[in-house]
Length: 119
Image 1 (spheres, rainbow, N blue to C red):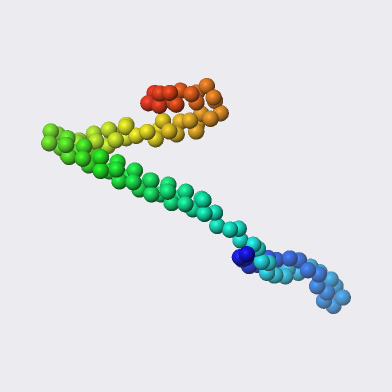
Image 2: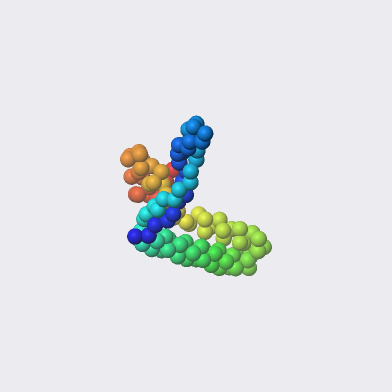
């Protein structure tokens, strides 16, 4: 088992010229380190890779839609409209709503049946 050393302070009695008083004394304590949680580590890696892939796909989608619209309107308007379209087609708001309504069972059923109409 792995340990780490932690420095602590305690008060000890010290007698000087017949008078006892408490003075601070430093000492070392070996504290065990908990083992690494490999499940959490792998899960964090999967979430990280998933986030990178989602960001890349949304960026690619926005760029493609913006390029298609840039032939008819100015580039700034085209890419702005593409960004609004990608943000509107995102499932994140509907996926997050069950977590916010977990204390109200009646309102939890609605996002599961029609996620695009969630409050």
